Length: 187
Ligand code: ADP
Ligand code: 5GP
Image (cartoon, rainbow, N blue to C red):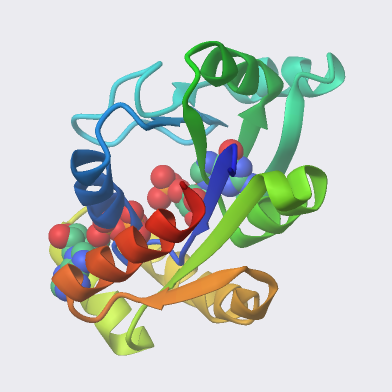
């Protein structure tokens, strides 16, 4: 049985929305690895729940102390990283760790955990639809939206490096597909 799920998608694809449904379908099964980031919290985001929001200095110190399993500069000047301490925390809970990371972080973690992890890439139906979702979410400035769209094209090229790819066109279908893949791996 797998010990971890790695899930990556271009920002705005619907990864958070899908995972919320999956957590409801598989209660007490998974626990999110809470990443550290140097970006500012969005409205409603809570430190220590959604992310550990760190200053650049705090992030650098953790890097120097070798506290990260992996980290990436996902956007220019914005760092994100998986803390090794998160794996210990989730192992103690006897749950399957969910790594919600960018494509490069996802590939790095998969290379480290190998068959212990299942990597899933969530694909947007198209770039215009992705732009629409990000705009509707209302979380981005014009500049950060453009950065995310630019990056999405590079990220889609990494889909082939994942164990499975799910296209999030219809939300219900994507959740069902995700759930079926999990059932294959949880028995
Ligand atoms: P991510 O976590 O990948 O950045 P979110 O889960 O925040 O993305 O979703 C981005 C936006 O797209 C949200 O407003 C969400 O409600 C919407 N969304 C998610 N899945 C779909 C879908 N299949 N069709 C239309 N809108 C969707
Ligand atoms: P957001 O700012 O929208 O929350 O996340 C932006 C991107 O950073 C997403 O692609 C997300 O998966 C990625 N990300 C979040 N945490 C980590 C992490 O710990 N490591 C890496 N490499 N990427 C992360």
